[in-house]
Image (cartoon, rainbow, N blue to C red; front, side, top):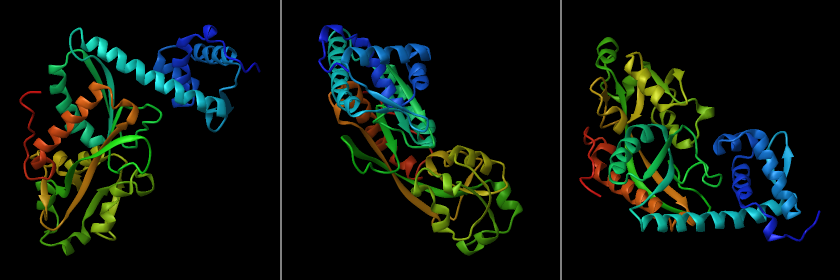
Length: 316
């Protein structure tokens, strides 16, 4: 293939297609994110490869579109261009009427559904030109594949070019309905739990070892109903047929549930928030990160199970 690149022959919009395929590894997923059909994505990638005179992807049945060494080199440059363009657009829009743009927040299921979504709805009242996608999912979000701009997870990333900080601590307790407690053997101490049923995680499908707290707290606990979703466990507990260890911010405000042995059975965990280093200059990203940190500090009591009321920042 021809190795000399003629800058004037590159369709710069093809680089956007290249980024999505590199991040999703399939033309079909890239097509959905770009709002075009599969053939358009494939055609744009071929066009870019012809313009550059280089093979950017190798196709694999198991791994999809895999970047070649040339593709890896191009990815770094294109991501740098993307970051520069985002900063430029934000600065221009900011000078003509306030912050604008779009971002995605990937977070754990319960925290994203019950806390982040509620808090961000208030944030958007103050920034009408910003739009936000919230992805509350029971698995890790990949920032390297640009599945989100900000991630909130149970574990601190071990490596990567990230701006990372500990967002907050939160507490989990054992919960049951009053009906369950009235119709089953009394629970006066931890030893009394041996004869009770629990709802918990599917152990081999848990996305983090930090979710496997039941075996540590109550070895040999009886569980016939398991789910990868903490929200599903919460709804199962509401049926009054089993106990469940749930985040206090999820179960505490619900009067249909009550904490069981709150001074004896509790778990402490942390949420970590991070975003890619190349987004540090994007004001909307740093603003949202600062806002969520302030919201978490304001709601420390709720997150630790010391309060059942959610609080909101009075102003930004």
